[in-house]
Amino acid sequence: MAKPMLIIVAAFALAGAAVAAGYEDRLDSADYRACKDTTTGIGEAACAAAESDRQDATLNAVYKSLMARTASPARREELRDAERQWIRRRDAKCNHAGDDFEGGTQQNAMIGLCNVSETEARILWLRGRR
Image 1 (cartoon, one colour):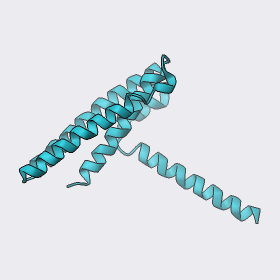
Image 2 (cartoon, rainbow, N blue to C red; image 1 turned 90 degrees about the vertical axis):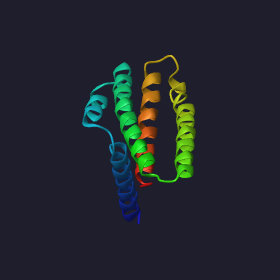
Image 3 (cartoon, helix red, strand yellow; image 1 turned 30 degrees about the vertical axis):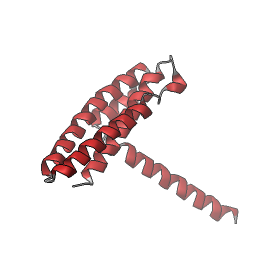
Image 4 (tube, helix red, strand yellow; image 1 turned 45 degrees about the vertical axis):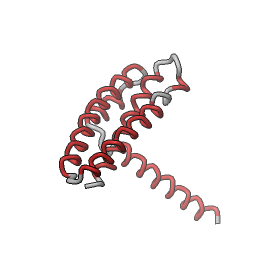
């Protein structure tokens, strides 16, 4: 009885890891994946900052495209307001992402990683609104 249960637990663990890895790298650039795999601390923060800039440019392009395709002025206003609210929520969340590492080299890295993750999720959400 223990062996089948062990197999089931192992299968769920592997599936969870595969899903997490798939999500993590969904929009990450190759440069970012290479950078974060080879650095820690201050270097990781620099990697995240560069990727955040790339993701922000992608987000802006997706947002502008969606706004251009939205015919109704009321819908464009709703989208603009929703985007502004999202930015406030992201900033509130990510500005505290490194609180557990306050004063350490990981603090800025955690903030940057949060910004990348939140921006990637927003890009995917906006793309789904086509």
